[in-house]
Image 1 (spheres, rainbow, N blue to C red):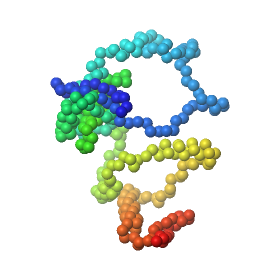
Image 2: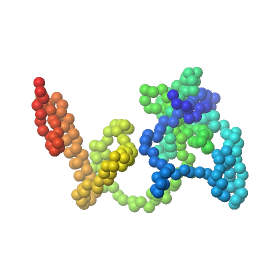
Image 3: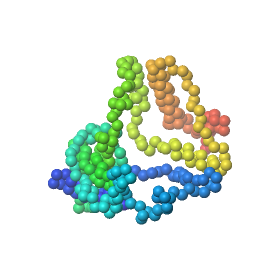
Image 4: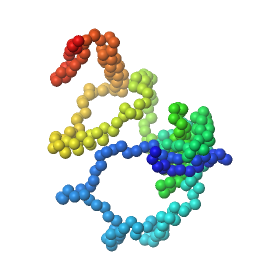
Length: 300
């Protein structure tokens, strides 16, 4: 198991237990670019220099707060480390809220939460079960990475895994006022027929969430381009978007979308049927080089 990102105590009134937090995400991109000199092809190096262009070592650099133009208070790393912040080691749950109350705009990064050791497992399990059955999340604060973060502590809906989740959250003052952006949107009346078609379109395209189906196509395109340059092959370019028939109005667009989805579903159903138990024994569908599909009899 990797090293925990944070470890400390969860404090709920007089109840406390130790936990460890592990980052629930990781960077999967394998494409890394470096800065090179266009003339020499050599890699560019970044160096820290003072105002008089003197090269500085890391040990010679200190943090400074400008309290007046050109005048600074210097802060040593150990002084920051010894700040008196209780949340550095304790996540004190200040309140509980309904799990669906905070909007998604408040959530930042997810973390896996596990009990610190077997001794802490009982209290951990009781609080986890209580959060599940009450459908609540706990809000508190912990300090790491040079600031104090608002954190939501929650239990997964399903009981398959015994852990909990924590999410760092944005403070209210970090979010811009939506009225500045939404306030000038023109108010229009919603046509019931259009609404009905839109709801039907959503219904037809609704499926169980399968996160593994969604891939980073940008990463794949970058890799394809890099490999093409390495092999001195033609570089693949973005294909122009296919031209669609001119849509007269929203109702027309909705109708065509629903019909198109119906046709796609029917085609998918027909393919599944032709390759299922209803297909003739000894026959299989094969694709020729021209892309046409024909029949081929299997040898006995």
